[in-house]
Length: 403
Image (cartoon, rainbow, N blue to C red; front, side):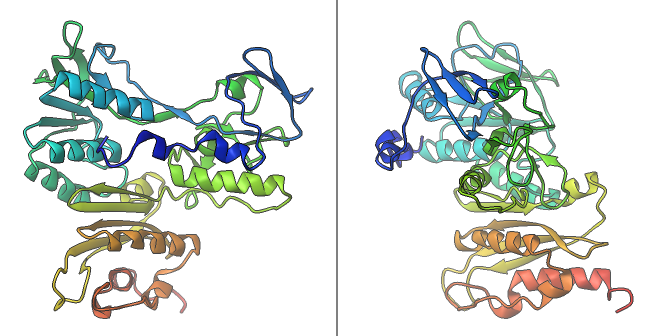
C-alpha cells in the first residue's frame, strides 16, 4: 500500500516449492477421511497421507455493523485487499477516512496514508480506551495517543461504531454516542478468527481458540498436526489458551511441525505474542503480559518505566527510547516488556526481553545482565534500561525472603 514493494515480491512462487520436490496443488479441500487417511479436493482429486498438517490460518473479523456492505468499506488482510484499497483510492480520491480499530495494522496504515497525503482527514475509532491497548499499558498508550493527535488524527477512544451510512457508497459513520462522522472510506481492522470448518468436519477436538494440540502440535488424532492461527495456542507465562494470530509464531510452529515429522521431539514453549510496529516517527514493541493483562490473570505485578537514549549523550543524532518491564511479584520472574523508541535499533531489544522471559529469569538475575555497549549504538552502561528497570523493581520488592 505504501508503494515500496510489488505484490509479487511478497508471495512465494509455486516454483520455489516444486523446485524443492514439493507437489503443489491449488484447490479447495472438501473433506478429509481420517480412517482412510485421504484428502479430497474439489474437482475429484484425492491424496493419501501418512501424516497431515492443518495450517488453515484465520480470516478477518467483519463486525455485523449495518452498512458494512457499502462501497468504500475495506479490511486489510491479504494482498488482494491491499490492491483493492489502492485501486479505490486512485479512482475515488476519498478525503475523509475512518478507521475502526486502533491496533497496529490500523495505525500503521493510517500513518502511511497521512504521510502520503497530509490533507486526509482521518478518524480512528476504538472500543477500548486507548490505542494499542492490547500491546501497551496505559502510560505508554497515552504517549502514542498524544503523538497521533499531534499528527492530526481525530481519536475516538472508548467509542463504538453502530452504523455505516450511505446510498450505495459510504458517506458517514455513526457512533453509539450519536455522533456522526463524515467518511468517504472506512477501514475495519478488529482482529481475525481461526478457520476451523475443516477441522470440525474431521471431528478433531477444538479448544477455546482453535484446534486443540499438545506440546508437539499433535491434535486429538496423532497423525494430524495443526500449526499457526488455526491451533489453540497457549501463553508461555500463564499456560492458558491464547489466540496468538501473529506471523512470527506461525513460522516457528511450521518449522516445529516439520521437525516433528522428521522424528524430533521438540516441544513448543507457548506464545509470548512478541510484536512490533512502525508508526513513522516512533517504533513500538511488546512481549509477554502487560500489567493490565497480568492483573486479569490474577498475577500481582511490580513494574518500572525507564527512559533511555539510543546513543551516548555526547554523540550527535541521539534519540530517546523508553522501556517498561513487568515482573511477577511472587515468583520474582520477568513476565512482560514494552518499548517505545524514536530510533529503529532499540526497539529490537524486545527480543532480549523475550529471551529473558523464556529463560524464566528473576529480577535479581536481570540486575546483573551485562549488555554490549558502544557510544554510537547504545546508551551509556549507567543508562541501560534493562538493568535499571530491574534495579527499580528489586527496590520495590525488597530482598527475597529467607535469603
